[in-house]
Length: 251
Image (cartoon, rainbow, N blue to C red; front, side, top):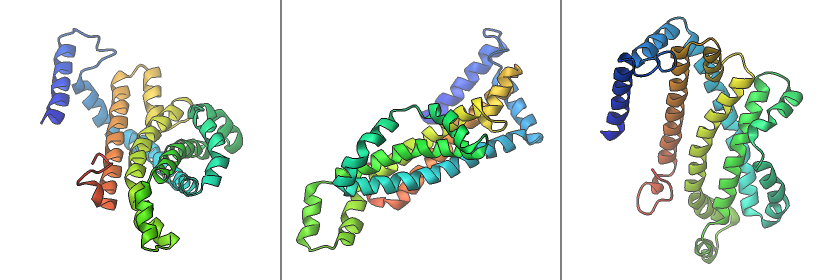
């Protein structure tokens, strides 16, 4: 009830304050004007087109980032030699702000979708790589001892011991990385795009169309909530043991 009631109360107060002229409607238009702008943008297709462009970039970049990050994190988590060889350079690259790499990617891949997707992929990669590696390294030693006591093969040890123990932490990183992917794609669209929700927000600001700008901001928030909820639901289905009794994942 509080989760629904507080946002509704905020919107009602915003409407009252704006209608009473206590805040400047040029910068803080009432929710009714924002809703009217959203209806107009849906009618002419502007909102759907830009939302789809943003969502497509997020999903493609997220997919490649998860696959590559999980693979590298798995290899480094299972092998101390590989971890010793790659951990310093990957840690150094992890500290570089990812948006700072956009000019480099534009030089390599050119101005276009490939550069945007590559930057999202790299951003997601580092989140998933770090959490996956840490998850496998931190599997309790007594779990491994049990596998050895049953003469488990390396594959059986991985399938029945290491992977189930690591999955909860991996899904936590997926929830974090999908949110960061939304932030990064909006930042990219601010500075180097002609479509997407980030471009729509920036273009509306430049044209001093505050209601349309707020529509874009709300859509970004809604998209982030839906994507995070989707990853969370997939986590519930994939690792049901994390729902009950001492789970590592906050489901």
